[in-house]
Length: 94
Image 1 (cartoon, rainbow, N blue to C red):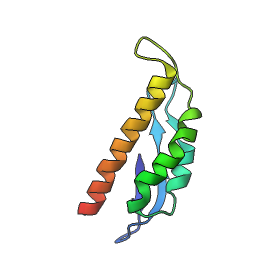
Image 2: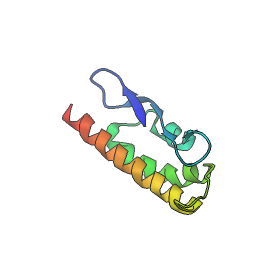
Image 3: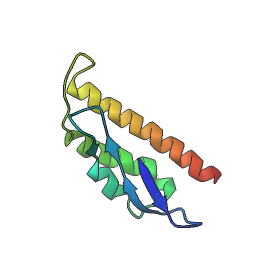
């Protein structure tokens, strides 16, 4: 996940979110990207939580010995939220 902020601002100008290792290629979470556009850093976690079910359902996921599709989608969501929490904390300390 990457987002850009204006200098001295706390509003997201653009965001890119990709998930890898689930299918044959990295895949965008377009619903999450669209949700993050134009919101403040403080609103990131609830915005992601709201958009995540739709975004995860759109992913192409290969089931294998490491887990089924539902497990892998769930794990992708957990890891994305952890990443968002770290980014929010870093933005707050900047």
